[in-house]
Amino acid sequence: MTPTPVGMRCPECSRQRTRVMTSRSMYARPTATYALIAINVVAFLAELVSGVSGAGGINGTADIIRHGALSRATVANGDYWQLVTSGFLHAGFFHIAFNMYALYILGLMLEPMVGHLRFVLIYFVSLLAGSFGALLLTPHGFTVGASGAVFGLMGAAILEMRHRGIDPMQSGLPFWLGINLIFSFTISGISVGGHIGGLIGGGLAAIVLFQVGKRRAIPAAVGPLLACALGVVAVIGAIAVAHSGTA
Image 1: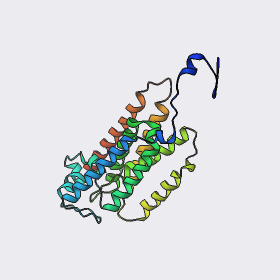
Image 2 (image 1 turned 90 degrees about the vertical axis):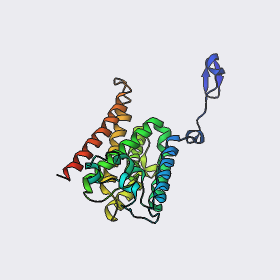
Image 3 (image 1 turned 60 degrees about the vertical axis):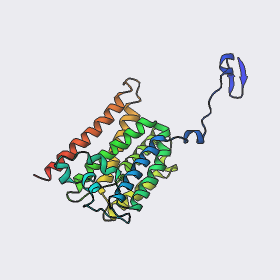
C-alpha cells in the first residue's frame, strides 16, 4: 500500500490520476440548456419578423401565432403540433427575457445533476403537461410561452435536491416557486393552467426518473420510458379537452 493525501491506496491506484470535479467544471457545459434558449430566441425573432409586437400581447393575425400558438379551436382542428410550438413562442420582450433567465438558472443547476437527456426529457414532459393544463383552464384565446416547462424544471430541481439529501431551501427555489405561483393566481393574462400543469408534469417526470429509474431491481430504461408515457398522456388529455370544447 502507498500513502497518498487521500489515504492508503494500492500501487496501481496511486499511479492513476483522478479527475477533480470543481464547480466550474460541473457547470461549464449545460449544452441542452443553451440549445433550448437558442431555439426560443430564434422563434421570438421570427415572431418579430412576422409582425408580432415586442412590447407585449399576442397578435392573432400573425401567421406564426395562428399556426404556432395554442388554442382549443386550432388543436381540435388537427393542429396538434401547437402543443409543442406554443412553448417556444412568447408575448413580448419581458415575457421571453424572464423565461429565458429562469431557464438559464435552472439549467445551470439541474442539467449537470441529471444529464443532458434527462434534462431535455423533463423539459418536454413539463411543456406538454403545461399545454394540457392551459387548454383545460383556457377555453378561449391563444396561449404561448415556456413558463410551463420552466415551472416543471423548478419542481424537478426541488425533488432532485431532496433525493440527494440537499435542503432545497438553501437554493431559494421553494421561495421562488411560491412567489411565481402567487403571481400566476393574482396577475391577469397569465396561464394558470399552463404553470400548474407544467409543475405537475415536471414533478412526476422527476419522480419516475430519479426514484423509480434508480432502483436496482428495475431496469434503467424504465424511468425514461415512464417519463415519455407521461408526455403521451398529456398529449392525449390535451386533444380530448380541445375536442370537448367544440362539441
